[in-house]
Image (cartoon, rainbow, N blue to C red; front, side, top):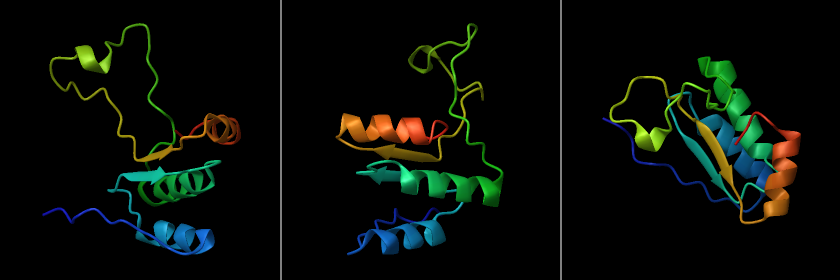
Length: 104
């Protein structure tokens, strides 16, 4: 049985980052809403990668790959995206992509 999602709310960013790192496992999916410059997303992705041998590479399309929305069934070619950051600031996302190109 899967545990219900864990939502973390803290008064300080450094406390949040520590709690997020301690409570995220390789089996989890991690989404940071309001990721700003991507610092926490990178820390969690690195932690997941070190703990569970999860690749940091974002799945890339190749010439022979069929877009996900056109696949009729799961052929096992899609990779798990274990860590994602979102932010409403395009500027912050651009900086995050520049600093951490392997994170999304």
